[in-house]
Length: 262
Image 1 (spheres, rainbow, N blue to C red):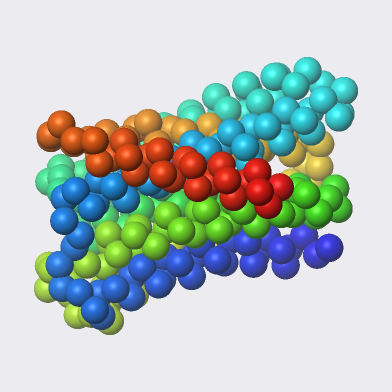
Image 2 (tube, rainbow, N blue to C red; image 1 turned 180 degrees about the vertical axis):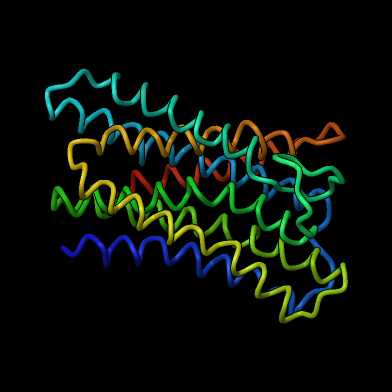
């Protein structure tokens, strides 16, 4: 099994789904309504939480125990490190969330479009790491079950990336960008996934015994994104159950994919 080829294919699918979502700018002029947007955010959060548990933390614990380490140790340390990594990125990288006027991160003169893409990039970094590491683990252990689980993770992340691409391209179109440029910007926002996916694969190749730590690192980074960004935005400004329903559906689909294919 070629570790690099599988990792590239695995992270390439979510990237293509981001591009497919961005292509909706050629069909629609306006972003999804408030309730639909909240449902998408909740769905993405559910997928990422389920993926963090079944595709990352549980394999990290099992791999640790196979190495003779306490199962909880790499999982706990890596999880905290991943959260701190995203915390630092969140504080340092200038970015702007949809429907907000004030940018976060270090002061900058970046344009609004760049700041919007930067915000999505923050979400996509741990996703790319997670998918790349899952395929790397399957390739290292030559385990068909792990390969199936990695495929399930790639599919789940890809599904939730579809509305994410639209969430970038459609608002840019509303701000006066051409459809082609809005599509290009939305597509580029997903490019970070194969890039970070391959970087983590390279890290796992040189640090073979660090795989449990890396898996839990990706899990911590994803949970940070869920709690810091996705869940608050899914329930922003009003009492609504649509975000909760989206979360439960996303969690359910990712859980079924992982268990059924794993």
